[in-house]
Each structure stands twice: as structure tokens, then as C-alpha cells.
Image (cartoon, rainbow, N blue to C red; front, side, top):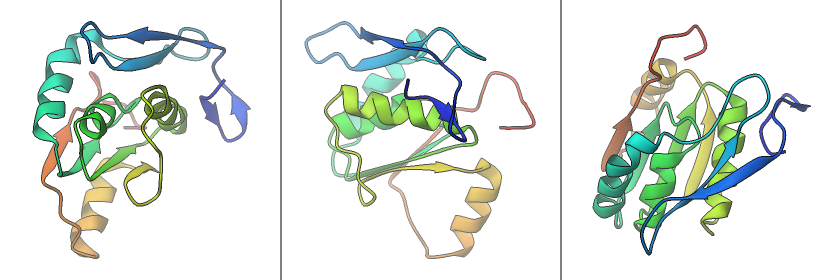
Length: 147
């Protein structure tokens, strides 16, 4: 199982689903463990839009969950996709989703950062002057202390 938290397996095996269409993206679904982890099917039109807008762009995916929007951006030719989420199991699942779509995971082009999004934004804005061409903000449906 790919989704782990501090070395402890929190999810069992996953199944792989593919979105409809010739170029449908693949995503893992983890249906066991502490919480269900996967991809929201109602976000497919937004993933398609992000994919169509991402060629040669630097994309920041905030509250990235399992990286669906980052996968879409990378599949669309993004120069980089930076995924930020506060939950390590979700970021581990995101890495699996990149692999399911034959997208290389490398520190320069595709990154996964466990961080509080507000703190990340404050730190990033004050630091190196990193700029993004497209920013996806998709917070969880309900606020939690870990978001």
C-alpha cells in the first residue's frame, strides 16, 4: 500500500479507475483504512480544464489531496506541478497517481510538500520569489484542524 503515515500503513490495497475518453487519466482508490482516499468524479470537468490550460505552465495545487489537479496539469504538459497538502497519506497517494499516468516524479518538475497551506503561502511569498502561472485552490469540503 502506498498511502502511509510516518511509516505506518493506513490503507490497504487500492483499485485503479480510469476516467472516460481516449486520454482518460488513471487514479487509485483506497477504500479501506482510516478514511477513504481517491478522486472526486465531479471534479473531472475541472481536471480537463486544468489539463487544457497547463502546457508549459508552472502549476501550484493547494489542498492537493491525492494530486488529481496536479496529475491533470502534468498530463497537459505543465513545466512543473507543485502539490501542497497537510496529510502525508494523501501525498503518498498523489505520487501513486502520478505513476499510474506514467508521469515522472522528480524534485525539479513535480513536487509534493506536506504543509499547512496558509503557512506555505506566507513562507513562499516572503522567500525566493517563486511564481506560478496557474494556481488551483480546492480546500476540503469541511474545515479541519489538519487542513
